[in-house]
Image (cartoon, rainbow, N blue to C red):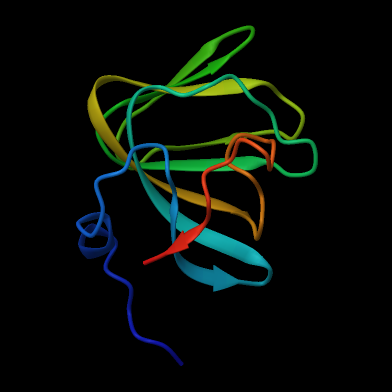
Length: 118
C-alpha cells in the first residue's frame, strides 16, 4: 500500500505546459497531472478515450462540431477517434488525466511529450 498523493504538491514540482506527469498507476492506466496555457494541437487517440478533470482554471475542449467548457471540478471524456484540442484561454489551467499507460498525449508517439513520473 502506498502513500496518499497530494495533487497540488505534485503540480508544484514542475512548470512545463502540456507535458503530463504521472502521479500514480492502476490497472494499466496512468493517473497524470498537467499544466496548460494557451492552445494545444488538434489530435485524436485511435485506441482510447481521453479523460479530463479540471482542478484549477477554465478549460475549453474544442471538438470539430462544438466546444465544451470545463470549470474546476468538472470532467469530460473525449471518445476515442474524436479530434479535439484543449485550450486554456484565461491563463494557466491544472488538470488530472487518466489514460492507458503509454498513450501519447498528441495521439502520435513521434510528437508526444515523454512520460515523466513525479
